Image 1 (cartoon, rainbow, N blue to C red):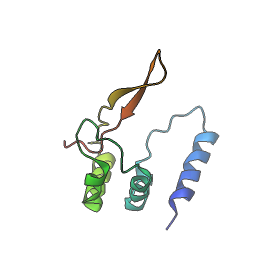
Image 2: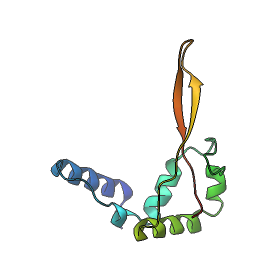
Image 3: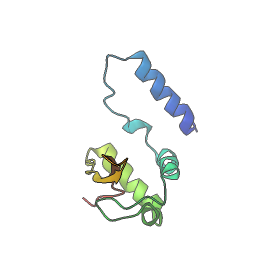
Length: 107
């Protein structure tokens, strides 16, 4: 089976070779291995997003959750959820915006 890093390199190379053309879909690259690696890279101690679910809670039923996400993405039923916006102090005069992404939206 092709590794995640090899597939990622192939996507980068295709994007570089065809800079004037948009990448219309990446769904054919998505599988359970790819999504498990993506989950592994997410900070598990991040604050919950708009849905109120933590990354750790999502991981309690990870395989089923990822299979559902892959199915929705490949079928066109997935819609990216909004990102919760928060502001943290940057210095005495300004705040820095941060986005708290949603782990899962139940559609």
